[in-house]
Length: 589
Ligand code: ADP
Image (cartoon, rainbow, N blue to C red; front, side, top):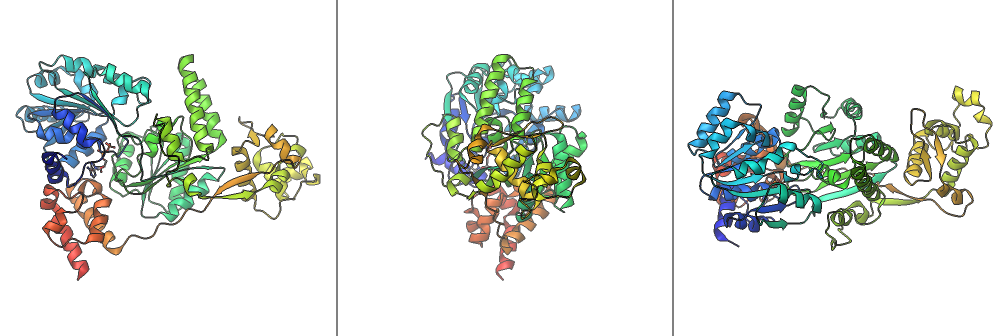
């Protein structure tokens, strides 16, 4: 290992070792090569350009798509004692000018800007006279129309670089890059003979699971209840669903928030901040939430609806566990999500060719939900890692967190009831007939005379509905969709009715409640919160959870021991070290 690089990593960041790929990427940049770095979320991309920026002379420019992301990064850099600033459209022109003057005087090592800024003439004129050593382009897949976050202004980045009097090193980073996107990034950003580093998409700390046929709201309520101290995101497909999830979570007394494009800007901003500052524990959101979320201690991401493709899923789910600690990524599947996505593709403006591509990606996503293979391997294969191990030992499929239950008899009862009702009624009415409900409509329609009336009276109505969802997810029956959906059987149900095949379903086991954190961890966390409020930065910018956890288990008692904790660099020691030592000392007493 290059000792100087390692020393710099320890001094500024407090880390003793590089994450995979970091050291090679940094060495390439320092040797003057363009690079393309493809690393998963949480892989540590920021260090890959920040450390060279510190070691190279002059200024480094970072092009980043979102204001909140830039602000977070700049806060974090300032906490590390590194001079950095960002310029964005939310700032007043006087403030922007003074930032540019500071940059011009050489007072910053890093300057973050959105790609749109490059169109500003005054900005370009000022920067043209500055020695820029490095241009780092974050979320570089935004340049590609094949990616899912296409941002036209990324196309202006390369011409802008080319007009500079001296071409700096260009380093592009992304977490999501299928082969066509990768080729697009190199071409459209005009990277010159780049060194390409793909560190792999594996995220060992993520616990993946896809769960079918459960009552989603009940599942989510139970999960949030059993993970009370943890931060999480629940993604839903539509604003309406986000609103109703939010109401549900609030009604249960959880510190919940919501985020979608239909809310006014101030409320959205406030909610995002409250989430970053740990005031809001669980956020119900559409996919509008997240690209700018650098929060490292998100402990779970639950998808209330299936996204359109694996790229989007892995990116959203990947917002959990950036700090490398255990995190849950749960996808709740229902066949209705497939109909929604198909509808959206069909009614999109995409060309026929692109639509075909989208349908193929959708099918891969559906297959993921039904797969009994290792889920991590499934995703890694999807991203082209064909030699990924077939047993990660961590996902729900590897861990066999399901109970296989034989529900053949119950399924036969349900199927024959649907047939006796001529396949013309919805799920709840069928379940009510099986339950033996005295509902007026049932009596009016004469369904109390059916031989299947009341044959499942020993189960609750909700359990019958849950089972029907499961049978639907397993494609024994379909929901016709539309405003008055009715349940119909598929050919897969026929052999079951004739007792020629069995129905075995995988029911998820009840989620394990998390153990409460240790007292000392809670005390350190409380101290972190006080400091965060005082400093006006999110708590994880002061120290990550993982750093506090290491402090709780090792209980450092002096400067030397404190500096050996991962995440405690020199600047943080100077600023905060004693305040945390104090907590530990009085706890030991
Ligand atoms: P990405 O941008 O790739 O999603 P980040 O740059 O935000 O990832 O890094 C993810 C987390 O890993 C951050 O909390 C960062 O401080 C931490 N990290 C980065 N490099 C290292 C390292 N060498 N050792 C330990 N933690 C690291």
